[in-house]
Length: 142
Image (cartoon, rainbow, N blue to C red; front, side, top):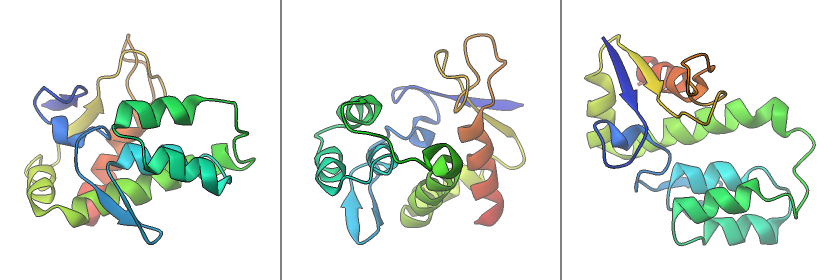
């Protein structure tokens, strides 16, 4: 069986980076893993803080997708590791999430994101599903 997740009002919503589970990384508290991930795209500390302070993950994501501030040059090389770090910390921080993830056993986990062919499976299922793969890696680690 494959576990699909995407929106925050469906089964396994906790796996979403938009889910309301904060993490402490780099000496700061982040409201969601989405906040952390989006902020890491930039070297500009003021802009990182603006993203960190965003009232919800959708606003953090929109700020992260803006190109009014230049992306760090190494972003494409480090983005998977940034995501791994944030997702691992989320499941280490929240015991109920750790239990939920472990309870998935060895099932495949897929972010059913129709518009995302990198982190999700895309509209036609041909996406890389990197977030799902990272969740499976984290499950093996914890």
